[in-house]
Amino acid sequence: MAYSFRHLIEHKRDGGVLRSGEIRWIIAEYTNEHLPDYQMAAMLMAIFKEGLDGHELEVWTDAMLHSGQVMDLSHIDAPKVDKHSTGGVGDKVSIPLAPMVAACGAAVPMMSGRGLGHTGGTVDKLESIPGFRTQLTPDEFASIVEKTGLVLAGQSESLAPADGAIYSLRDATGSVPSIPLIASSIMSKKLAVGLGALVLDVKVGRGAFMKTLDRARLLAETIVGIGKTHGTPVVAVLTDMNQPLGRMVGNANEIAESVEVLRGGGARDLVEVVYRLGEEMLMLAGVESERADARTRLEKAVASGAAFEKLEQVTIAQGGDPAVLHDPSLLPMAENEHVVIARESGYVVRVDAFDIGTAALRLGAGRERKEDAIDPAVGIAIEVKVGDEVTAGQPLARLRWNDEGRLANALPITESAFEVSEHLGTPLVYGEVR
Ligand code: URA
Image (cartoon, rainbow, N blue to C red; front, side):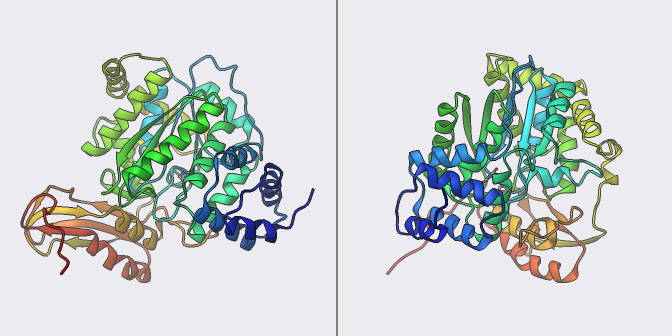
């Protein structure tokens, strides 16, 4: 049955409820390129404003999930567990985490996303490894996870294609931070690969799509609920995204930092989140029942080199050049560097993740329009964390850039991302009203 898309948009815009047949028609027709982007963008904005009720969300997610093939990995004996983030700045957690968990005996069929808005995406980061293919056919996806216990892919023409199309449209039209749109995006691609269980990293704070704990909790509950409907256990962990995670923000530079974690190093906050989520994954998969044992297992996988070897195996299996993992200086890196310095001495009280993510996007690490290519070689190294003491003249951030106009556009927001104060900690008095 054909509907008037204009009428459906108006209906949603005015607070109406979409019926199951209408939702399935919208998703199928848009995936098959029978509906124009401008109308779909308007529908997404109407949903952003008006939301979806429980039944609409269930049908919307199911229609996206069935927009392509749904895989069956039940022939793989190992327990299958995946992890997904709702999106952050410097959030490269999946890249060290997935090989660590795979090295501990679980199978990780990971289906990730590209950068969205000011946040980076695992798929874009992985593609900065020369040759690394993230667009896999369902057969390739299944055979790589069977062989290596791990696969790191993006949605494709055959797997959750509706998410691919809607994701980039939302990115370019400002309709990302919507609970039903994020929940359906994540769960449609996760359920399409037949995973056994999912650990969800719900980011909260300035650099996240959910700015408050209440909104983050609601998103977590929504996704856990979709998991329950589909018989897939989901555990959500709420983690801080007020300042960027780790030190690197970009693409190739985040691969280098991920390798550091697999070598036993890495920034404390990044390492902490990686291990916390790893513990949840091993417990949810039934590999360990106690958190402390899960932690020890993960630590051993890193110390023995087994986790690094997993990343190497999957890189080779997906066509990437493993030499860059052994020597990250071979990764693309812009030659030009601009250093932002502290203008005064004191304590760092703010490193704004949203501003830093926006600055990285302006340098070319993300997309302004859906057809934009990203530059894997540009990015920002953050030299300080909140609470650090700095002296005037000390570097706060190093920007790697390739285009002078882009640098000029990124600099003011990078500089204003940092706040240095005489006093440590958040102020007790926020302001006054007379
Ligand atoms: N991650 C996704 O996969 N989708 C979203 O909409 C946001 C984060």
